Length: 238
Ligand code: MN
Image 1 (cartoon, rainbow, N blue to C red):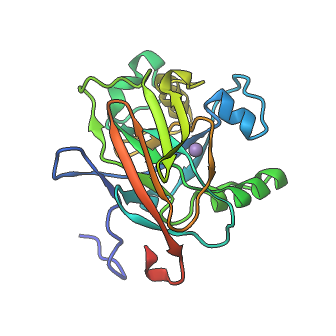
Image 2 (image 1 turned 90 degrees about the vertical axis):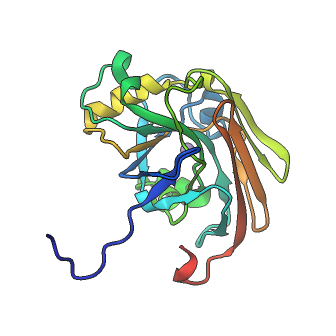
């Protein structure tokens, strides 16, 4: 048995709808600019160039219903509602027509973003991590196993702040649909059980502040509901 110099951190995980057992999270891959209208609002051409990815640490996940502290070092904290794909089977160079065989399930998540830090990094040609990969930046509602009626190629995706709709689109608008995302990702990495993919957000992103209630959903996958708390003042926040 391996001995460690201190107790290893708990395995990051997300809930599975209707089950006591949780889905252990390995890595979180996020697709940038995967809806044309959102690419335009970010000031970019939505031409169908190959998708690009960034990542978040596995322990950025937060359960549904929680209060998330307003993160440090930003004054432009944004929501991005996204379809989450949970990988359940290992694969490399997966053909698109077999990609959905590697999916454990789907869920609703929010790619919380420090937009000011992301744009500063983007404009200076630096990594996006400080804008995207901070603590508690990935609230995710319970995953739904495949086999339910849900399919990832169509369905309303929406987000509201304090009850006012901000994002309202359809999964059929994804520039790169889920099978293509898995196929392309798996050319660069061996995808493994526990990997999550955040598939990109539709148009309408915007800023949130302390006290805001953020709700969202995807038809067939239920809803997510978080509250933005006061600013982080101590390391105990996580
Ligand atoms: Mn995103």
